[in-house]
Image (cartoon, rainbow, N blue to C red; front, top):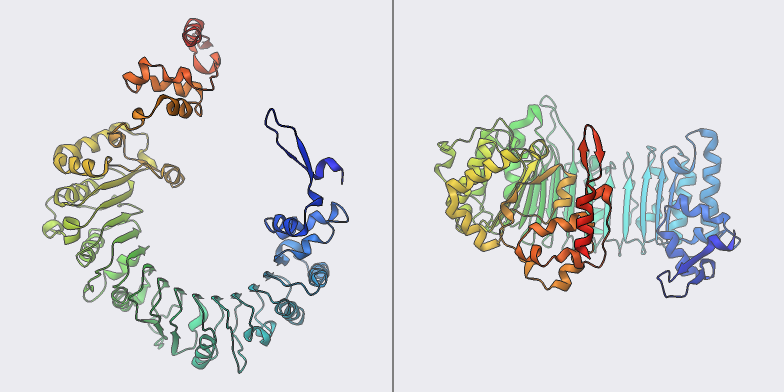
Length: 561
């Protein structure tokens, strides 16, 4: 490798002497850290740089071995993948390994794979991420279940786990199980009793297969994620599994599934955040609806709750909409499009059980099929939280439909605590200034007093803090009503000049129309950086030709001087 390509050049600012540092002279620990920021397949390529670099990559703290990336999907190419993996493990010698990510999509030699995992265990691996696509439990060595170094274990396999007679994970804090299942109820108790410090548990899909009871008892567990997409048809005589969770320090609970299995939560007083997604399960809709109500009521101590997709639609079919009181719930996010009056009625009913709610977000907005007129019976009873505690309303994908405006008016009319309305236009109407102005004036006309109160409390009605994020989702702020207070003009000239120096001159010039101060003091003229370009700043079209407006351009430049 030539010296020029191996050097880092430092101090390129004017007035500073340039200094070159040969990266190959850096200590191994620094080079290992640099290589650890690269994908393994890229780090391997550095072995051709020089003799010093030849085997550096093999000592990375994190090793990613993926046959989908490192070998062609042909049986004869398995040899090169095997040679590569065994070379990595051989070069490391007795050095410890922080993390191994092993993914075998094509290669399915159980003996080889088991030996590689065993080697990582012998090297005191702390984080083990296994994606093994063969239906062969023998790939997992028994030694993995009696391990003092593992802090994180993630297994993706479509097969039953074979547990030894003794299970011990004294340091394991994170456990993710994808597609695997247990042979009987006793296996689950044996596994979790061997994880005394487990803090994060993810159970995906098949984990409850063939079980009657799945018991998790832990005073340490903080995060539980259940993706239970087991689905039983009506004609199947299957009662499902009872998933019993007793975790007094659980702070996060996430559930996605059809509720074919029963969830029983105990001691959830520490629960801070929860995410629930229950798709409508078709022919078991009534059973799922009643279970959904039961599950939500078990989360009554939660502080922040997100209800996703068709959860509210499913709840519609419950025998009785009896929600427990949620005394701690302050933040509610509805990440689905509210599409029917009946669905919105469920929302209002649920809000009546949230006396301390401070923030509600409709992240997908309302559908055009909503018909919430001013005289709709749904407004006959306004939830207490809207009147007494609600401080912020976020409505995304806003179209200016009658139902949307009616909802905002009702909130403004009945609120006492509201500080901000965070409203974002949908992509469809982002350029429709006429529509935006009409909506703003309509809100001002009907609820001017309430809007003035909101403005006094928050100095703005519409939030602009997440403009970049919103553009990503195709949504835009409702309009100019947010620009009600000008604080920037009170800043000293030196700061304003510095701010303007970051703007193209043609944009900085436009600030002269903001106010008398910006115009008379010609603030933009004193920016530290000025660029003049007659092609960019001034042109006019004559008979289809763009000709420079020389006079205007000259006047601008001479005005600067």
